[in-house]
Image (cartoon, rainbow, N blue to C red; front, side, top):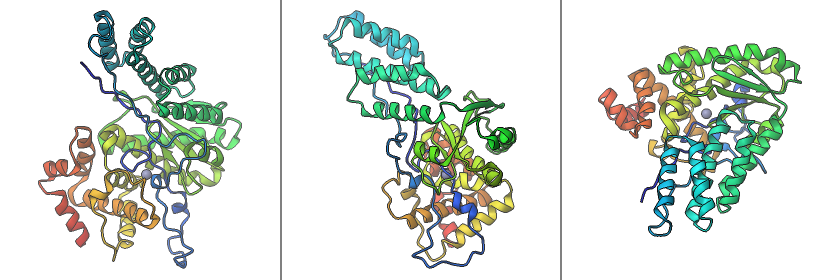
Length: 406
Ligand SMILES: [Zn+2]
């Protein structure tokens, strides 16, 4: 019996652990020396993906959870169908979706009562749909395939939620214009003059951020085979509908696209530079380190690198650190997994500040290589502590202690 593992492509991810991110809009509006507000009035600096709330009917705020591909029970089908199923599994593993679907269609047509074949066909259709949707969110075939998968596997509610999200996305973005540059596809409402006239500047800004992050990471995702990054600009209402994020959010990366609300480009263009860098950094982290990069590292690196210059980074980290004074540090182990259950906004804010301050500390004390090695190591199944020890010959826990002592 053979069981194939599925490569999961997340549509939207909720947790702190993956490359989902949104940039805090208000932060850019906060005056550095603003008069302090009473604590009951002053909201904490609201971090991004922790605050994600699924919008009613919005894109599901969870990953598409793939199901395992199974072999039929011994003796339940003839060896011909068992062999075809085997071949389909092999085709799926090499992402030859068309071949896998063809084989499983045959298995299912000849054995309609064998649930394993119906389930495997549903899975192959869903994987093909997700892969195609990642390349072209406007494709109709992927919606057709997902609809068929749902008929075959009605118990997989996550597929229905995924379809609902895709339909919503299509409803919001249906008439959007697309413009491409070397590494990006920019989508926006072409009836908006501010975006129409500003799109070239925005693409130039994105390309500059890509070049800079590529240099820092020593890695260029598109040149390494990834599709161009999709960046979609929305009115605030469309953004909130799709992402479930409120007015505080300045952007989001959901694993497939960078989504950014823009009310009036002329008034917001200066903030977009940081938003682009922050969200693109999440995208780089995902490509470079996979889906299991812990939250503190993912958000720390993205906050640190959203600034272009060292002096700005250090100033941000210094401010974050100063706001941590007198508060107990959150153990790194608490910042690895999902914090979706966290309710306390101040604790969440603390987590973000600490992530930035600690990442900045590591970057300055032990070098960018040490930080990026921790990200890269996640893709090979190593913990950041293992990667850090291998790179720096120092336990990460010791570095964390030294950071706290500062
Ligand atoms: Zn973020």
